[in-house]
Length: 269
Ligand code: SF4
Ligand code: SF4
Image 1: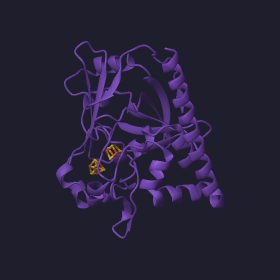
Image 2: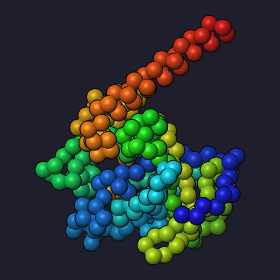
Image 3: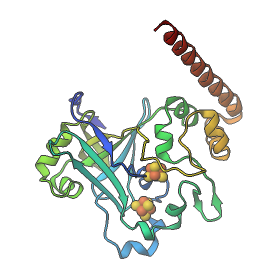
């Protein structure tokens, strides 16, 4: 991927709509088989969402090949800007929410490839916002995610209803962290505008009794032992338990150091 280095560092802010699951990250990956098979015959009856034709999820990590994901064909990606055109709000929504397939209904409390193979785990956005120690242990790398919007008028008209393509594009490029990139999709190279996905979970992360935000590796492992253990065994083989123990120790030592520093600072202040 070729990235334009001209990144706006002091522009407007990016946020998600104040609504649960407005990040829609799992609709690009976890519950979506490559052929959109999970939606079965429904795919012939409902019209596509606004996201699937023009928006992709891009995951980058240092030293690794970029990963690019297509969305489910029913995902709506809606962007809006404030009246002064200085900030961007994104809302990703299922276009067939009431009739969505069983994989989507149960996710992330019950996730799995088939009704016979279910395993619950933290959802993708929960892992994305969990922080680098968790990512480095469970994925062996730290990753950053972007929505990649195709740099063409039809895409802007579809994602920003009520705006002209030109003004939507100009606003996007004024937002902090947004950048242009050329991405190889199949055999073609296409121009995209990358929007860094914010890591703020408030009002966005799906929550339930079984699905709390990840705060520490120990807490996440207690909640989702089976899923996390599988990842660790894949990455570290027989060494997985030692790696887990070391990461927990390191994270807890760091937290205790931080708390000692805060206490010392409060006493001095
Ligand atoms: S918060 Fe989790 S379950 Fe909700 S859309 Fe995001 S990734 Fe999916
Ligand atoms: S059917 Fe709806 S909830 Fe399921 S992946 Fe598609 S957009 Fe997401």
